[in-house]
Amino acid sequence: MSWKSVMLCGLLIASLAGGARAQGPAPPSTLKEAFKDSFRIGAALNQAQFEERDERGTRIVTTQFNTISPENVLKWESVHPGPDAYRFDAADRYVAFGEKNKMFIVGHCLVWHNQTPRWVFQDDKGEPLGRAALLERLHDHIRTVVGRYRGRIAGWDVVNEALSDDGSLRPTPWLKLIGEDYLAKAFEFAHEADPRAELYYNDYSLENEAKRKGAVELIRKLQARGIAIAAVGLQGHDKMGWPTLAQQSATIEAFSALGVKVNITELDIDVLPAATRQPTAEVSQSAQAQDKLNPYASGLPDEVQQALAKRYGDLFGVFAKYRGVITRVTFWGVTDADSWLNDWPVKGRTSYPLLFDRNGEPKPAFEAVIRAAAPKAP
Ligand code: G3I
Image: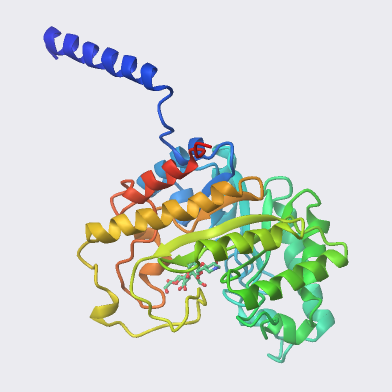
């Protein structure tokens, strides 16, 4: 570079610095910096990211976030694939990545009706297990998995998606074979295995009144049994028009009133046309591929990009308002290319639900979220 260019760069930097001094501190350039006085902010990682094979994704994670969740590797099918077979190699690498990068490490999830092998609920003849036998199997699983990461995984999604949309307990094998107290037992087993870990109940669509009321009653019952629920996880698989900001606020307030914190645990915003009758994250739902359901296969129109940015900015305006009640916001994936929404409920769509695009570049929604962190002038 010629001396003249060096001089010009120096002058440019000096003028920018002078200008910045005049305008006050530069705005934060990362999410964790922007929300450092509000809540932890993170993402669900796939195996390529925590094994650092997805270099771009890993760089976004270590630059932008201070908490991580495992998209799949701590689920029952991954760590406990057979009756006497535990498999922790991938989960060990997930936890090691979190410790190496000084992250708040989340465990997801101990009890779910999905991604749990059928053998869990059967005896060696393939018949349904009785209550006592299934409780012992659950106890062994939680004692082994939570115990392995005692003092390292800071918080666990103990039970995931135990409610139906009407707020009643979902008729899962856990409920049918053990009974209603399977939830309380799971939390007791987790607390026994790591008394210092935060314990969460995690679900989707709790912004809908009927399901929210069911969750409030569920939390109250668990609290009445002396179970310390640290937080409720609102998954946050949101749409452009759902939940409304009023619904989001009312839901945060409803759980805060129980004395529990709130985590937004699986945040994404789906801009694609609805392919399910109601807003849901019910992973068992599927829909036929049709062109009209995949309108942005070759790119996202700017007006949609800007609408997504506004939606994210509005939602984070609510989250920032409830800083202190909300202790964590986790995106369900790092870039648009990683999102489960590319294959649910329709396989093979091109979805745009996150803050970073398929090239790992921040979208307008990223800037909108950073702006939402700035305390509003009185
Ligand atoms: O591991 C197998 C692999 O061996 C096989 O070759 C491949 C081919 O189909 O499938 C792989 O399993 C996939 C698994 O993710 C691990 O990648 C399953 O098919 C796939 O269905 C599964 O999807 C996960 C989904 O949960 C399943 O329920 C998504 O990645 C994950 O993002 C999603 O996460 C859930 C949360 O845990 C709970 N809340 C809802 C959220 C979205 O469904």
